Image 1 (tube, rainbow, N blue to C red):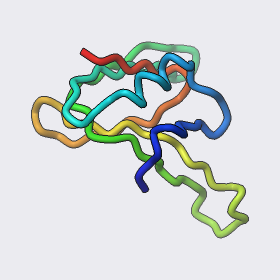
Image 2: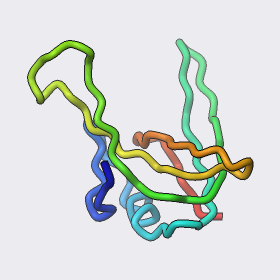
Image 3: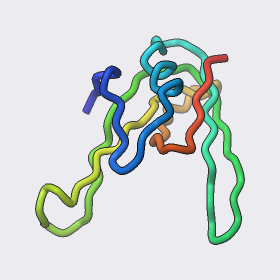
Amino acid sequence: MSADPAKIVLPTRRLAPAQVDLLRSLKPGDKIRVTQQVRVGAKKWDATAEGEFRAIAYLETGITTERVKEDDLVVPVVRFTKPNGELSSISLDEHTRVVKI
């Protein structure tokens, strides 16, 4: 599902306006660095990935049983190509930092 970059919306939180502006300005081929906060139990650390921006899209998620449509979440993702050619995507949350490099 492709996205309209003018409408980058998280399911429960908001992205910082400066981050939305940056995401809207990205063009395919721009080099980016994506940093996310990983949390396991009480431990937290940053994980970083770099590559060439491909697109912003929305990932429809949900549970495996049939329930009402309102139970589904739609999450924005940044799609990019890593330097080794691997196609990758990272879902955005309020802690995700994307910078153009």
